[in-house]
Image 1 (cartoon, helix red, strand yellow):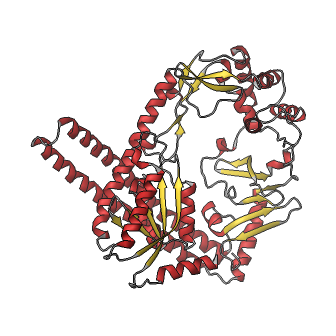
Image 2 (tube, rainbow, N blue to C red; image 1 turned 180 degrees about the vertical axis):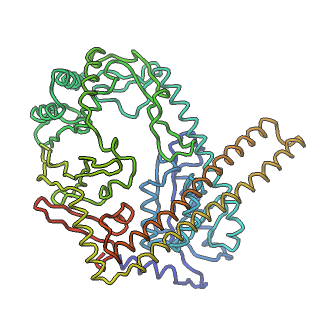
Image 3 (cartoon, helix red, strand yellow; image 1 turned 135 degrees about the vertical axis):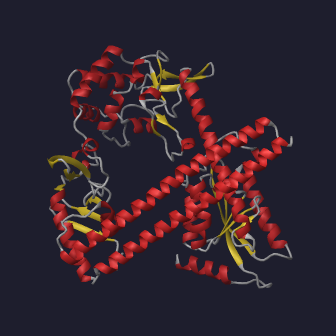
Length: 554
């Protein structure tokens, strides 16, 4: 790592014979899940355009920098609305590790199509990391002399990319809905017990005779009085592969040299509650609402579900299915979600782990003394496994954990001479940074909306002068209207975030005063717990290890 960083520093500050700065560049290219994209957007073409730019730059007598290609980063079949991409994440890791200090893309849409996140990277994250950003065909260079002037144009293009992605999402959702209504199976993978076949241009489910009998067995055993745990034990004892391992090995029973895993209880319940085994399709249960401003697919309301009956051969009878559904309803226990309406209730859910197997401890609601008072216990799920993942029994109640954590936290803060005013000052500084970011984004949205209004007025004049058709004008006006609605919604969200940030800062200030000065506070909240503590390990013998985020060792 140190040698890599040293090489980067030399490249960044070193000069060639013309005393020009040398940049270590990473070429990034991406193709979307949208297969209708222009053929010029192929990975190979994007890379070639970037390479050509580097070659022309380095051979120009008027060049202001020299570019050296460090590596090429690609993502195939990945939407630009998400930044959870392997190639992109590897690119950013190399930026953070100072292996590269310049990113080159064909155009802005290849980098990302999310208006907010793309803007954050180009205007905040990359400049903070000292990384140059070049979009070749857009003519944008974040470190050029006219960067400030071209930034506004880039904002508009970024906005267009965002709207394009939303339009694609809307059309894809409509196409899936139409396919579901026609009885076509729109899932990526067939349910256990079936395969997918293309019959007369429609994706149909056909029975997989290898494992259809297992599906019928599970239904019959449950209907006969076996619990989910008993069924899991039976399947494991008879060496029947769980669904994911069946897909891996392509046969039902575990053979020599293969690893046998037990089935999960949620998997059994999911199988028992799936109407697909009666020959009916119930689809579109999730709404891919990117065009509605949603980042991820959200559960759709039941009236939005698409049901098509008799689309494929049934594995079980409708009578058996209905009997099982009635039995499932009777055995449904109160879940954690039914008793919690505040995400701050369960403060250890992201930081408490089993010290033996390393898995996150599972929270369980165990009682309620008052209307607004909730209590949890935590246990290791692996302790109840019957396969090779079985762990030792590990359990603790939240109030016992509170007492230990608060006492240890006080001692550590005291030993490191951390004062209340320092914590409060750091908390206020963090809050101010967030508010500044939100306000800057709001200001940017206002500026963008004003530009859209000017464009709309200009297009209206072009329409009146006969330079644009009525269809073009109406389509453009609809786009401006949708973007205005999006901007207003986002501005309202930002104003709420600012207000929430101020309220949280005040709450944390009061807590820190009580905790560090008076010592009367007996419980953390989730924000402070995750801000102060990296991980808590719980061992079956009662030993608790706490790893803090602020200690010298971290």
